[in-house]
Amino acid sequence: MLDLKRASGLLRRRGAALLVLLLLASGVALYFGGLRHNPPGFHLDESSIAYNAHTISQTGRDEHGEAWPLYFRAFGEFKNPVYVYLLAAVFRLTGPGILAARSLSATAGLATAALLGLLAARSTRSRAAGLFVAASALLTPWLFELSRVVLEVSLYPLALALFLLCLHAAAQKEKWSWRDAVCIAATLALLTYTYSIGRLLAPLLAFGLLMFVRRAGWRSVLSAWALYALALAPLAVFGLRHPGALTARFSLITYLTPQSTAGDAALGFLRHYAANVNPWRLVVAGDPNYDQMAHLLGAELMLAATALLSAVGVWLVLRRRRPGAWWGFVLYGLAVSIIPASLTDEPFHMLHLAPVPVFLLVLTMPALAWLCDSTTRRRRALLIVFAAATLLQGASFQWRYAAGATSPRRLHLFDAAYARDILPAALNADSRPVYISDAPAIPGYIQAYWHATLQGLPVSTFVRMRVEDEPPPGAPVITTKDACAHCRVVAQNPPYTVYTAGP
Image (cartoon, rainbow, N blue to C red; front, top):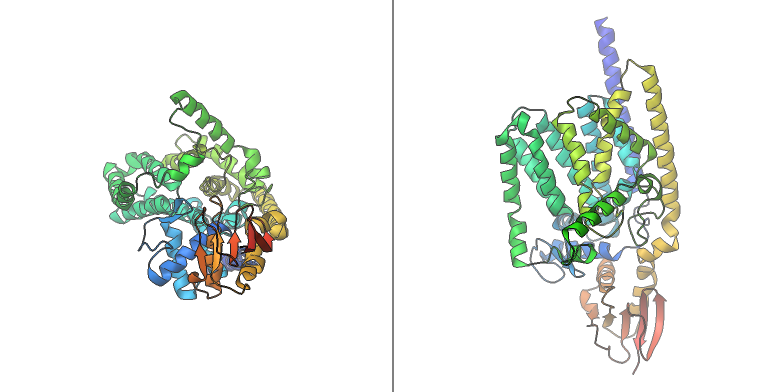
């Protein structure tokens, strides 16, 4: 009898290992398939991040010549450091390339799904739940789309999953060790420096650690706070040296003004917060912003099965007499993760709401623990229904995403014609250098720098002009302005025009 039990346990472990390997192989195929061509081309913001990562990997300086900057000045704002430096490390090994750059985001997406699966297995003590959550994360449109673009936010779900995994480990203890405090503080710092919303969200999450005081004691929480405060020192120094630099972008997109009264601000916040929890946007219509580069316009952000399981999970947590500090924190985390986006005037902006899918996937775990109860066949049948629905809708989204690669909107957003038509037309001119004349709102110079780098051409091939300057007669010019005077147009694909300057 003992041998039979041992053999049965061995078979279950081997079966689970086989499922993990199958899920990993499927994830790699899904996240790396067609990565070079879908999305098509390379967006301006992607080129900015990739070019600065390249210069850092070669010289330790950004495009402006600043050595090892904490934040990267680009397009009138400052980009966050974590993604750029990680990509610089990748480029140091591989050299600059679109595939290498997007592979970093794809790897982050795979790692996010793996960590959420691990968190599910630990919190529910069910391998089935862990596999289900990992598969759901891989098929979640929101997370998949973030993993396809070279943006700072692509790392944010991974940073949040790391934080939640560290916090869950600490939450099981009556007293946090220094290792627990360091892990929590380090991941809070990672959330702060990875993407702009983290400068508000991470402190809010740190404040939420108060929920663990009753179990772990003040010393545990204070030690994590102290270490996190220490990690914020570089940010504070940067803010003192560059007043207003990190809030300039926010001032352009917020509805809050110096003239806003407290009542106006409160009503505006409540209205935007309500818009950002719109379930129709979540599971049907998606991000309404037409110029949202990361999103397939009109597609869902979360799978219906995941959203329903999250709702059941919330209900199961709230109906408990004592839900515990961990689940209380998860509910709090979901609520405050919507605050940064609700301070801007951009409705249901999927990048600003990037933490939301992670919290929703975590909240499926109580429902999955209930469904995985091996004593009830009806629950197992429901689990199979949810699994089938997840796979079917996930496959449907993947088909639509692949089909949308060549849509006019995405070809335009990602400047797909730049490397194919615009740059070759300028380089085929008889004279050098090539002049770049940009409209203030469309800094197309970075496309020239990045794509020339991919071809091994020096940046000195180009001369970037001031807005008010005119190129010399006969010079080849790439412009993002609407018109040129006395010029001969060579190639055009909005917003770019290649022309030869007239006399």
